[in-house]
Length: 291
Image 1 (cartoon, helix red, strand yellow):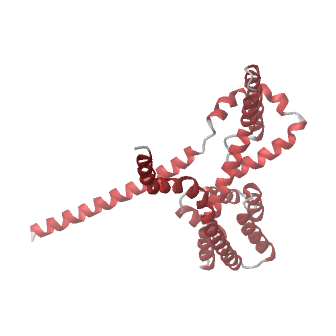
Image 2 (cartoon, helix red, strand yellow; image 1 turned 90 degrees about the horizontal axis):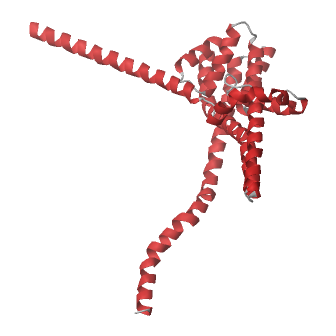
Image 3 (cartoon, rainbow, N blue to C red; image 1 turned 135 degrees about the vertical axis):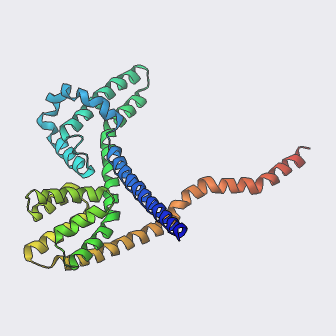
């Protein structure tokens, strides 16, 4: 009896140890994922190298003829989620510095009788910051677009179960992994907690991200809040519309796949197939003709 009790106790202790170890590993992996995401949002090396010298071009950046560029840069930086790392003046300053260096190397290319390469290098150097920022915005919008329907379904179920909007949002943020949409919703949730009106915070979120699907959902929630309509019903309607749009996008991509495959098929696969099939015949013909 004592042996059986000790065996049972050992099994319980072992099982508890395995459970605790699994829980620890899971939490560790989740924390590493969050840290990886936070550290992955870094400025390119060229920006890091030029940011200390942005003060040298401050008079140029503060001039009025760059106001439009600064406004566009501010919107793009907000949409990319990089507003904590760089502001619009620093971004435009980096553009000005890269243009100056580009002009310098362009003159060197022209002196070396390579004007085309010089002009091409100048254009690439000047356009690089805009191209990089637009690619980040596009990637972030795509990530938000993919995760929005699932978040909306969870939010709908939670609201229809009797919870209020903020409680539902808090529970979803606590259980979801940290992604682009989660970061923006968490920022909005904190603003509401600090006293900002919900409709104002949601409008600012829509203006900050400028993702069409998210803006449509947020505008519907704001209108429902202003008119006193049930938010749960609005969320369910928006969720159905987003699922329909996601299905249509998937169908469109599936229809475009054969056209996209055609070019690499003709350029890479067909020549290899022809060489494999016709190669021995051609070699044998050459051997017969030149024997």
